[in-house]
Image 1 (spheres, one colour):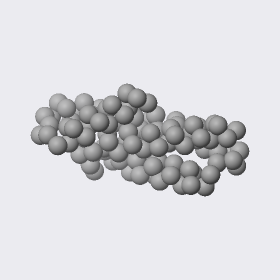
Image 2 (cartoon, rainbow, N blue to C red; image 1 turned 90 degrees about the horizontal axis):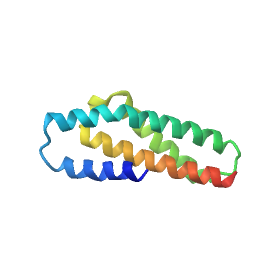
Image 3 (cartoon, rainbow, N blue to C red; image 1 turned 180 degrees about the horizontal axis):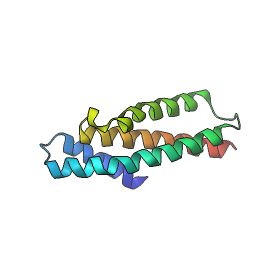
Image 4 (tube, one colour; image 1 turned 60 degrees about the vertical axis):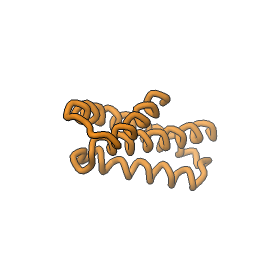
Length: 106
C-alpha cells in the first residue's frame, strides 16, 4: 500500500508538469493492474462486511470510492493519465482501510 501511495504522490507531481507521451503510456499501462487490485479488495470487503459488524459510514465510503473508480477503470481515456492514477490510488487506499476495519470487526 505504501508503494501505491508513493505512486499517487508522484502522479500528483506529474500532473503539474508537462508530461511526455512515454510517462502517460506507462501510467495508462499500470491502470489495469490497479483496477484489478481494487476489484479484489472490493470483493474481499463485501465478503468481510457480511458479518454485519461494519459501520454504515465505512460501507458508504468504500462504496463511493469503488463506484467512483469503476468509471475510470471502464473508460481510462475519459481522464488524464496522471489524474486517473491519483483517483485509483486514493480509491484503493479507501477500500483497503475499509477492508481492514471489516476484518477487525469479524
